[in-house]
Length: 91
Image (tube, rainbow, N blue to C red; front, side, top):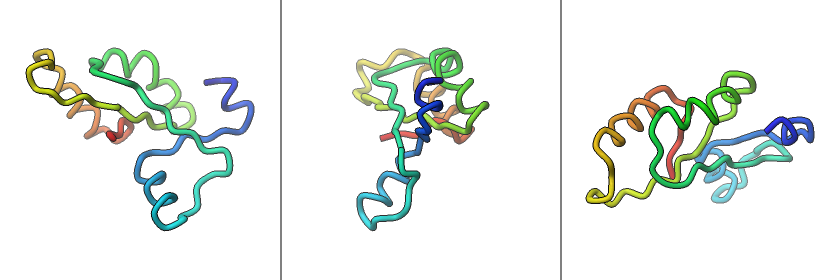
């Protein structure tokens, strides 16, 4: 992440990407979309992504796989809480 920042990349959220793709809305010239695949608990996001959100305002996109029978107890509630904080976005 530090290397990306040193090279002037800026993380964007899904809304910014959709705006760019659909109506050519402006995004930073060196935009990136940080994506966390699969089902992760809050601790994963707090450990690996929150420091960059707090330092640079970089959001992360959770590529959620939503099959209910394969979701561990409590996972959805933790991810809803992250979404309410506004720094974890969803595909």
